[in-house]
Amino acid sequence: MSYALTIEPLGQTIEIEEGQTILDAALRAGIYLPHACCHGLCATCKVQVTDGEVEHGEASSFALMDFERDEGKCLACCATPQGDLVIEAEIDEDPDAENLPVQDYDGTVARIETLTPTIKGVWIKLDAPIRFQAGQYINLELPGGIGSRAFSIASPPSEAGEVELNIRIVPGGQGTGYVHETMRAGERVRITGP
Ligand code: FES
Image (cartoon, rainbow, N blue to C red):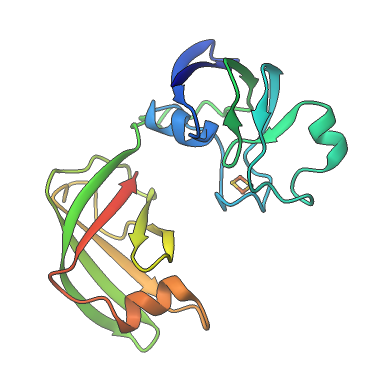
C-alpha cells in the first residue's frame, strides 16, 4: 500500500510505501532532505508534518521531544506514514547538487587492502554503474543482522563501475569490525546510494 507524500516548500508530491521512512522515499525520488545518523539520534532530519499522521519509529526522546511530537514534528529518517502526508522541510538549494535518486546496487567485493593499521580499502565492483557526486556516501549492507553502515565514497565519480571505500575500524564497532576481520574478496554485497 502506498500513500502520497508532498514535500514543501518544493510542492513536489511523491509516492511513499507503508513502512517506508520519509527520508528513504525522498532520497529515492531524488529529493535531498538533510540527514546524518539515519537512526533517530541526531535530529538533523527533523521536519514538520503539516497534514497527516506518522508513526515515529525508533526516534529517540532526546532527538524528538514530546512537545515537538505534539507540535507535529517528526524525524524523517524514522517516521513512516499512516496515510497521505504533507511535510515542511528545510531544504537548502545547492546550485551544484544534481539530486541523484538513491538506488540499490548489487556488487562483488573485488579486493580489500590494508591501507594503514586502522584503515582498509575496499573495492566493490558493481553489477550496474552508479552515478554520484564527489563527497557523497553510500550505505553498505552487512550480513549477520549487523545492518547497514554509511561510508564515504573514496573513488571519483568517473569510475562508475567500481566504488572504493576507505573504512577505519571503530573499536568495538560491529560494522567496521566485520569489514576488517571477516569480509573477503568475492563476497556479494549490496550498497544503497548515493
Ligand atoms: S538523521 Fe539523525 S535523527 Fe534522522
